[in-house]
Image (cartoon, rainbow, N blue to C red; front, side, top):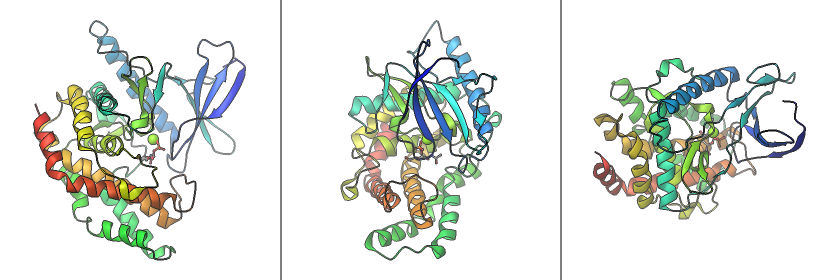
Length: 354
Ligand code: GN1
Ligand code: MG
């Protein structure tokens, strides 16, 4: 890139990588996104880039084949190459950097606004799954071993538990009991996978609300970003992650954890949006395990935050000492609300099932 850099500023609210918006002078595209990949999490960033190349090519080919019958504008972030033609670069201090194109005329929104926004977020995940549903998952490298494998997060939790130095307090006690009571059930998706009921497919890995780009003119979803965790997995991880994020009207960073609840009407709207794109490849077993996926990923994220709190905040970025504990409480409260409304959620799934 030979254009002059006018501005570089921190961008987004990621918990893992560092993201910057760069503005350049005299370029066809005035902005691009610069990211420092967290190499303590993504141990082989070159494999992240390799995956990105494979599925981006697949999606672009598929969009090309739809030109006569376009669903709607769908933007795919492009990797911008270095002057030497590489898709990332390693600094002497071992930090790994890469640049990707900025999606214009669209915004990412942290907390769900209303059921129309919810339907769009669901649609975006369904559209993304549809676009990669015929990509052989074995073509994608496993860039983050154990990601969304709940029993492995539990094993790590049990390794951390005897070593932590946090003084007992009511919130920590609540979390300890919460995890204790759900250990057996936490194998539910992995057991179904081992039994051959749920297949590995390419998934997004992190389809939370603010990773869906909403067109500022039409308010329609026109793309999904944060593609570092695209790898083989269960679509249930994605559906669960999308719903735990979108059906929590207070958002995952609220301090008011006792007020957190799962919004069932939003769940209906998000699933409607999702299934409008995804029903063609979902099997009977997929539907059977949807409720468990929704409940599990909220629980799993709570467990991941709580374990990180006990471990001394070594994984997620934090802004204050109890940040990961606060986040865990939000997810556990959300899980509780999902459990309390199990019947209503299962009914929605049945109603929407084609
Ligand atoms: C992390 O960095 P960010 O915000 O895109 C995490 C997700 C969590 C999310 C919770 C690689 O994503 O799994 O759901 O925080 N990503 C990784 O906000 O662990
Ligand atoms: Mg992410």
